[in-house]
Every structure is written in structure tokens, then in C-alpha cells.
Amino acid sequence: MPVKSVSQVPEQPVQAGSGVTVQVLIGPEEAPHFLMRRFVIRPGGGMPKHTNQVEHEQFVLQGRARIGIGEEVYEVKAGDVVFIPAGVPHWYENIGDEDFVFLCMVPKAEDVITVLE
Image 1 (cartoon, one colour):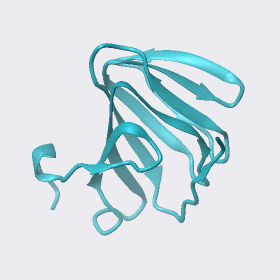
Image 2 (cartoon, rainbow, N blue to C red; image 1 turned 90 degrees about the vertical axis):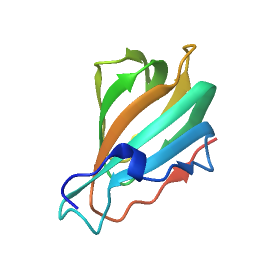
Image 3 (cartoon, one colour; image 1 turned 120 degrees about the vertical axis):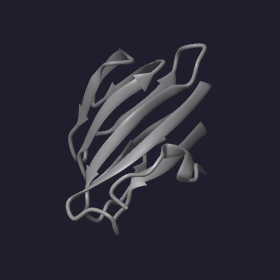
Image 4 (cartoon, rainbow, N blue to C red; image 1 turned 60 degrees about the vertical axis):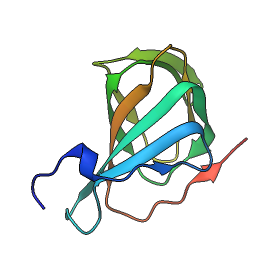
């Protein structure tokens, strides 16, 4: 389906996270090269340090968060763009009073997620 509403896509909890859900907006059966996902991290929630075998291109839609990428820590907000190289440890922590919402695009390739803590 070339056009759909985000409200048509079910939210799924992210098991490794705390207060985190994901929607696969464009899945592997819909696009030949990339997947598009929408993540929501509730206030006080986050994702533990982990690695992925694929790179991440992200666009922050709402809220504020602290993101660790490798040895660096960044505070990001709506309108920011984030790049996470393949294999680099990263984590997320919502530091605001509202949901932290971002789009995450990844290559359509096998991805192994390894939680590091």
C-alpha cells in the first residue's frame, strides 16, 4: 500500500525497553531497500545499551531524549536528525515530560540486536 495512516499500523511493545513501543510503518514486504519504523518512548522510559548489525537513520518528531552513541552522549529534541553506524553501541533515555517520538529508517537486511547491559 503506497499510502496509509499511522493509525492503521499496530503498536508493539519493545521487550528490551522500558515504556517503549514500535510501529513498522513500511515493512520488508512493502519496500525493496529500507524499512521505516516509528518509536515512542514514554516519559521516564528508555532502551538499554545495545548494538545492531545495520545502521540507523533517525528523525526526532517530538520530545527530548538523551542518546548514547559509542562513547558520546547527546541531548536531542524535535527536528534533530541522528545517525547511528552499524555495530556501534547506543541507548536512549526520555528526559522530558512528554513522549519521545522518532522515525527510524534501517536497511532491509538481516539485523542481530545484542543487548550489552
